[in-house]
Image (tube, rainbow, N blue to C red):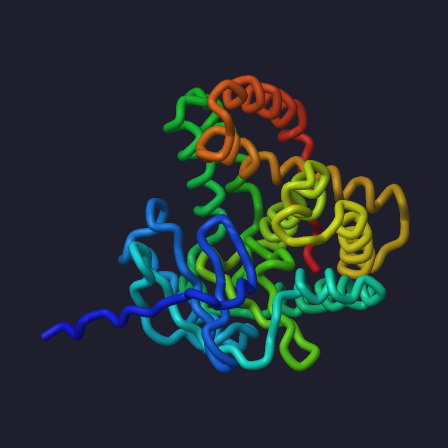
Length: 299
């Protein structure tokens, strides 16, 4: 007999972070809950996300322990272990004088994750998630058959690596616990080349930050995002060469446009009157550069 799902209330709970899939609340000093947006996440998908979190934890990825799935009003959530922690976004907002230190911690943590090996097949090949973005854009009517095949070839040229890729590594998904970063949102994680992670980050730290969207949702200014990104790139790639940094950013921006165009084409937050012109403009830009990109060198 199946045990009834536990129901909980988030009334009065502190918001720790927000993302595209849901909101994270602090239930008590030892647990948090991620409440998923109902229209975008089925029970099956949420339970699969919980399993991905468990696999990541077992392999040494600094993430929280996933407990049970719960009902929260009309939505569902997953309860995780968390002790005395708040998001890196909150830490930056409260301690702007420590910005450089936090940026260095982001770079170090990211590098460590990108050298954390899994058995091939343990998590999804991150190139498949990239192809899913392309397919979603195609289904929305924004790519031709030939353009889809062209982009698939580009993605297939990205070398496979059996190392961890988070794919949503922004300050709202990073918790500070005892001076170290702990991940709270790993459901989209997979295995693959760092370019797939870094290009997703580019969308937040550079593209979205310029629009003030992430600044509004996280309380981090676009100037702070710019400073963080500059430090992360310099430290991660161990370079201060302006030409090298510019080329790295050019490559990351190029790959990031695959996910950006998917968002413009499918996100309900994009006004309908702007969807086609914005998508068309970004698509034109992407296809001008897509064949000049190459994966970031092995690290």
